[in-house]
Image 1 (cartoon, rainbow, N blue to C red):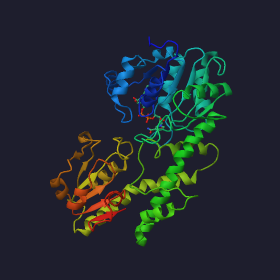
Image 2: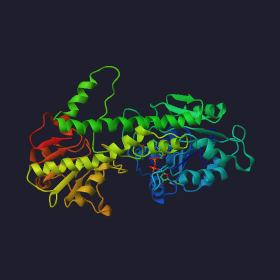
Image 3: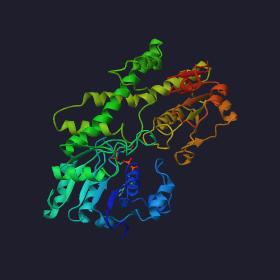
Image 4: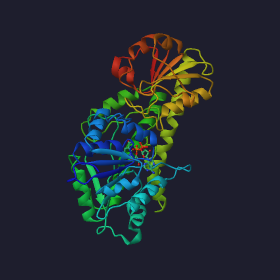
Length: 428
Ligand SMILES: NC(=O)c1ccc[n+]([C@@H]2O[C@H](COP(=O)([O-])OP(=O)(O)OC[C@H]3O[C@@H](n4cnc5c(N)ncnc54)[C@H](O)[C@@H]3O)[C@@H](O)[C@H]2O)c1
């Protein structure tokens, strides 16, 4: 049994980027947390006090483990102790790019078998509006159990931005929508223990859709600047200067920046949950589809720019050595999911380039057939072209710019860090 018997434990299913920080946040707030995951490697790491999520320091895991406020298990029966069960399971797309809720359904079925009377269930996984009511509720009500009487059910989207030091789980408001007002109230009271502000909405559907709106908004706006970047290049206009100028307007404008494409688990995937759902209402979500096409094209566009940069130094792609800086999808983390850098490496290799990469957060990808190199003088000079694909702050760009024959900067990192562009550097 966990200690602190006066506080009911919270069960967290899925100890990934979302679930692990949440389990730790509850433990830190004095609410014992039971984390359930099916990955034996992750459970072994956590039980040994090792964290695999950058935002969760290992010593915090260790402290809470030894204080009995955290426990990790593969066993759903451990949830029988929990007053609340929070589901943080993956919601990917299937091979037809349609929502795949199989992991969530499998998890909820096991939750239903182990749910304590009067417990609260919250879904945090990003999904289409209607999932909580149409998919989870019938499973949990099997056998005559009733929501609002025998258990409580709500949706509360996770908004964590891995690596973001400014907006944390605690300082980012938490949207909550329950099936009944009682469900919302209970979920709000629970999250009030770990976040500064809870924002209740009237239904789970509003909460589900609010998360998709946030991600669609980003995807569409990034697509807009990506298209503008391609146009600006043709026109000989500096898109980064255009954005900086527009940004000086103190109202009605929010800057988004172009890049080699979308990455991560959320922005490239979640909008398709909404487009799929919209089809059931005789709607096609044109903005989402168009933004998706534009963003998916960006790694191909980036390779076109790398090809012409090599051309400038009289080198064909075939046989050239290209060093890609940064393979994770965003700066200062090691998350590779949907990373456009991987696509760029694949396309360049497909064109006959000899590709290598440097990424302090992803030291080894030999399993994927990719060679990692240290950023030495020799490696910089040996490359025909160096591509800045992800701008990790710990990577020193000064020697890169000084020693490389050609640099293609897909993030505008050189100007931001070192000032005006030297002749050997080309920016997206
Ligand atoms: N990563 C983010 O930044 C982020 C942000 C907001 C929302 N989300 C959403 O949150 C959800 C979870 O995302 P994530 O990034 O934490 O995923 P993740 O892949 O990092 O973690 C999911 C965890 O679930 C475990 N798991 C898989 N099947 C299981 C099962 N049947 N029972 C128990 N555990 C199981 C996996 O081993 C893994 O540890 C997704 O819906 C995602 O869209 C993610």
